[in-house]
Length: 134
Image (cartoon, rainbow, N blue to C red; front, side):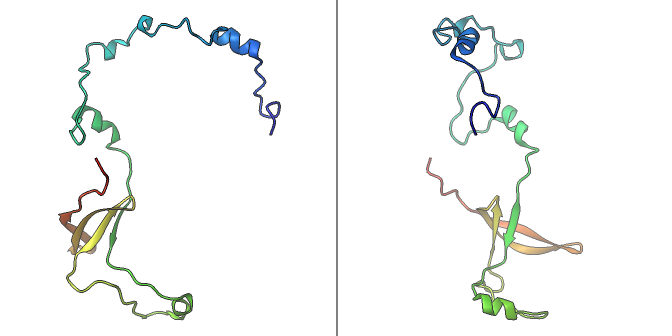
C-alpha cells in the first residue's frame, strides 16, 4: 500500500509548518505547566516489589485467567481418537499430590482441590516464587 492509498500525504512543508523547520528544537519542556492535580505530588521512586498502594488500584479491574491443572498426559492422536464416553485418561499426578495453579499461563502457586457447596475450588498451599531475574 502506498502513502497515497492510506491518506498519509503530508509533505515536508506540512511537517515544517506543524513542528518548525528545526524539528521543534525551540520547545522548552521547562515552560510546560504541570497540571494542578500533579503539582506537589511525592516524586519518590519505589523499590522493586514495593507496594505503590495509591497507583495499584488502577489495575484492580483488569481480568486475569486463573487455571488449576490436575495433571497432564501425553498420547498419540490415534489413541485420542479412540477415547469415548467413560474412557479414563491417566494423569502424571498421584492422588493427594498438589495441583498447579496458573495465572495468565504462569505458575504462581500449588494447592488442593476442595468442594465449595456444589462446585470445585482450590486452596492454595504454596506460593511459587517467580523465575524472573530481579
